[in-house]
Image (cartoon, rainbow, N blue to C red):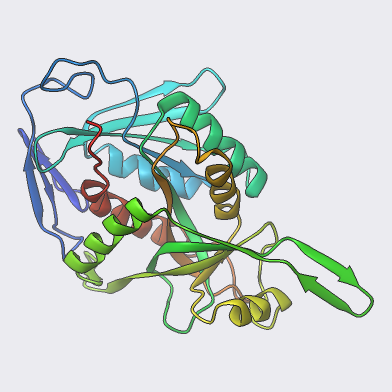
Amino acid sequence: MTDHSGGIHVSGTTVNFGGPVAGRDMTYHAASQTGPGATGSGRPRRSADVAVLTIIDEEIRAVQATLQRMRDYRERRLSYGPLAREAWLPDAENRPIRVAAVQTYTRGTDSAGLAYRELVAEYNPAVVLLVGIAGGVNPKVRVGDVVISDQVIAYDARREAEGHTYRRGQAQAIARPLGDRVNDFMSKTTAEQVRPDGGTFHIRRGPIGSGNAVVTDARSEIRRWLAEFNEKVMAVETEAAGVAQSFHESAQQDDSPRGWLTIRGISDTADKKKGHSYHDLAARHAAEVMALILPFLVFDEK
């Protein structure tokens, strides 16, 4: 049976990336093993290669739809509460890339940081992806575009003084091994992606701002501060700072992930027009880009 519903097509033992998601037409033939529970050497595999965090319902639905077009999709309830969606696809050398996705309990940096730690404890992945939506704050991005963040700027920490707020932002860049793979992806993938309806969206790379405050004012103090901190800030959202901090605090452990990466579809422009109209569209685009980048996130531990 062949599935043609989106950017991933599965037919027989072939997984094809392309179709409605243009710019990266990749076909991999599945390995002979029955699934990700075994490798060519017969060694059991218990951890996911890539773990995915989502926040709102539209995000997990989009990621779930993408995983359902991969191999051996299944759902299982994790011991600590969330429903995990799992699937796998073969890489260029016919090795399975196992993917597991969950939805956080609630929004915000604290919940995202906790979800990151729980996900790492459950799957011990090489990479954790935060996939979903964000508000665009850069003239280069428009609704529907997707931003791959190579740096997260946390904007919550501050000192309140009489007549002035002094922000103490902290920037955390993605780990070097992951940055190299993002470089590969960006150099080999068409920035302008074509939608099934003939429209287009762009894949962009750059820093994002993150904190618990939801920004809905084009003239907000947070937006001004972010622009002064780094004029290239692309978007704002409310979870990546928690994931970045959790990774930073555990990075010296031998079994810690190689890195985290944030993939955000732009659903609004973080101003008074902010709403829910484009949540589904932005989440779908982010999930499609997630699927495109997965084959680049393979490390040598397999």
